[in-house]
Image (tube, rainbow, N blue to C red; front, side, top):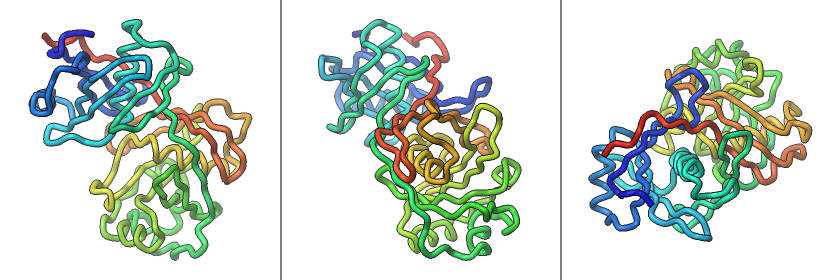
Length: 290
């Protein structure tokens, strides 16, 4: 592997032609670095997430993810950056596995984009729906900006989310989330985040969405792979996607100024999306820093 001091900056999930997505600092050849060295390098990388390749063998790629302040459990965007770099170096095939925190994440290259398997996702109509006024208030809209023709859903790929449809992209951009109100909805419905979406998306996309999760410690995320897997199940339940859709694409986070594009593949059957794979583009930004 390369010297552990090398650094490669990647932009992952960015909507083509933008500077969106997630900025990742990739450090290959980090097998001899200790925790303090990794943390120090992450603090000076200039990226919100630094990914360290600590091993590469027949079982796959071992990775550790750090923010400038601490080690974090997993980073799908960081994993995609590592896969893109290693594949470009001829070090891995187009099917591999990523290991983070002792957990295996199967990976595959599809249409030039790496994907990680998120597992199965399910969706169901929320049994007792809060009032349109309460839902609209939580996202800073008026009730008429919600798409009340579509039911409010709970969907999960391991982490349950509340799925709320809005009228169109203009309504999606107009959202001003209320942290306390969204957290209260989460407690009331047993969900960890609120996903606002519209199926009236740009050509070539199945949906456009935003994701808010104050119960997870952040207000909005601009690229959420596991969350997108839950949306895929919701879209399948609504009949907006079906088994004939071999690649399901959506945009996320346009209103944050860092728009993302996510792609998914899944075995769809009504309210269930089995073996959901989620990925997106991973582009290098510059040559390694010595």
